Image (cartoon, rainbow, N blue to C red; front, side):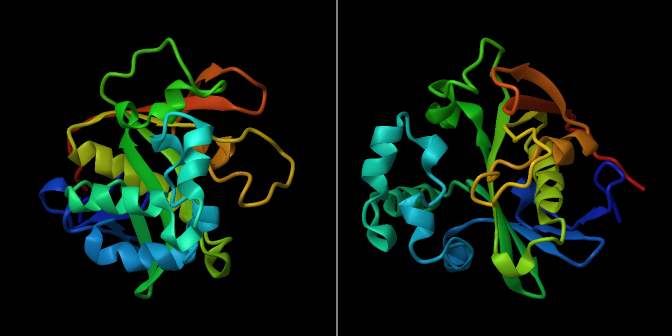
Length: 221
């Protein structure tokens, strides 16, 4: 079985990641599609976490995002996410444990996330050609403490690899203080650092931007 960067993730993936991935712990990671939208609702809750529906970075301004968040389960943000899926675009990955949806991350090309360009922390003068973004994670309460953020980061690396490679970019918190899951929804810097990401920009002490170069070549055992 082939592995991802020696980090214990095996692959059973067809073109475009269609076959998903299985980790050494038996977790399964699949790309989000219309058929799996109900699984994402279980992770986010039927209100989509205050109507966000993980659309924050896809919208140019916070004001527009707030407008789209009104209505919870009937929010415009939910409809926008569904429209992405109906266009056959997979905007992220779902991790399953024993068949149950446990965690989610968004992974998309940075050029598709205009909110980043308007962020005081993550706007950048660095090149963004062929840059993929990993801007948010949600882990269901009952599945926290199992290292699922790291599982999803590894899966995102493989997703980018199978998409031809490039740069994978992240926006974690850099803090030793205990923070709520809602606060550190972008992940924490130490997790990304252990997986090979390095800081390329820091506009505030607690808000680094980190990158990893992902080669398109397969690594075989």
